[in-house]
Length: 303
Image 1 (cartoon, rainbow, N blue to C red):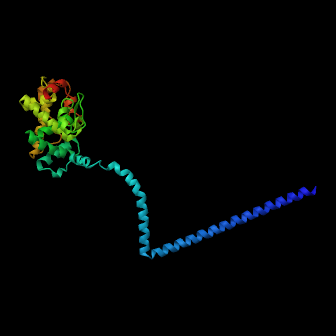
Image 2: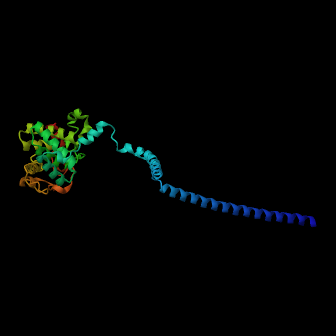
Image 3: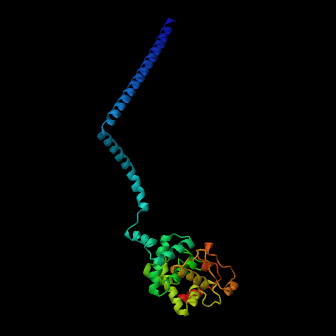
């Protein structure tokens, strides 16, 4: 009866001894940790005080820290850089060709560009490039540049991605499928959405229409596809009114940007829909808001 009690007492004594040992070890490790941290803190303070008195050491530490940060930042910059970089010299040159500094224009061109930018609420730099091109192409085609710009304004309101319900596209609303041959030298039909290319092709089509019709007003009816119709929906009158506004601006006169597009009374009476106000924001005002002749007329007469 006494032997089991003896072993039990031994086990209990061993557990108590083990617990005391573990507590003592834990307290010792905690004291050592506290002492090590205190020592480390003293070393850091001493190092900071020492480095503070040495400008060369301080500069070296700052430089190494900066280099480390830049090395971590460089991979991220390289990862994102390709998004903003051009694919090659050609794309960079194209981007520059689509805009111009209005300060580089002559007095007439600058005045027209500023007026159009404010009237149609478009950025002045791309408008300045289009004004430049209208002057250059107009001289070669023997057409007034203000007429070219007026057609562009009425057709698309300077939206290079405009498309009408009958398939006229771009700034000058050229029927791409009809005049696809004219786009071949510019790389194909998709060039219709390049503003400068669309302007050049549109001027060529307009020149042909005027030559066939024998007069400017009749040529505008050919251009809009209403050559065989009694009424062009006031299209020619609107273009000529805007042409007059732009000619006055180029001449140095003050023309309000809200100047109305004056349409003759007969044309107004015959329209089935009201004229589009200047600020209406239509992407292709001359195409989609006035009753025009079928697209086939434009195909046959302007092609």
